[in-house]
Image (spheres, rainbow, N blue to C red):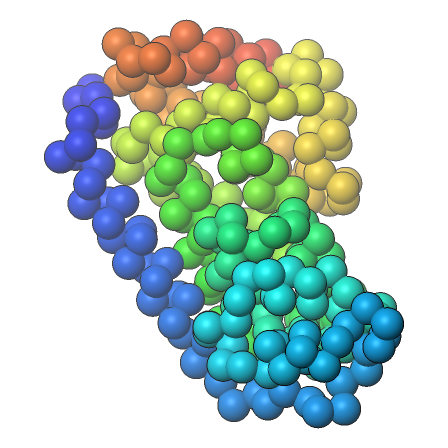
Length: 262
């Protein structure tokens, strides 16, 4: 049995590495979109979008003020700009959303990107966004869950713009296998504090807007390695404040697996 991964010296190094990977992915995303210029003839409603707003949005993307980015994303595709304009601002909007500095729900931004057909952007830009999302995800798994900052909620939003959750689920398995506490606590939140009902496998659909994505997540939950890693975490963290929830999560996962494989 591995030792309990709860003290600062055990967790500082992997968390620092995840933070650095996120910073590197953010920088790479900005580089992939570098060179896109603001359009002087951007469409807009002149009653609600001023010349000053347009001027503020025309500045260097990496330094755009969160307030103007929030206003633009809210109106993009309707009363201010189109998908091409959103593409230029996307790196700043995504990085602000990841750091909870965008003053709207992250899901709104991702829906806007989906509506803008982001997956048809130049391959280097699409790849950079995908790598950024994966780095953001790994950073989230290394942090403690809190309201509005839970793994399953993040995945539900992200499923709006990605067709396959497998890279994120593989990363979750790897994080669980590494023995850090936070990935296991995120998993326990799904099993104990979400709308998932362990004796009714169909309730997995309440976690996602798409049935295929829900099934993919359900398959990951019932995988033997997921249960094994959760059980190890529950044992290793039995002297922590998360012990009760982890024990309950192990029990609920067992019920869910039994019900889903009948």
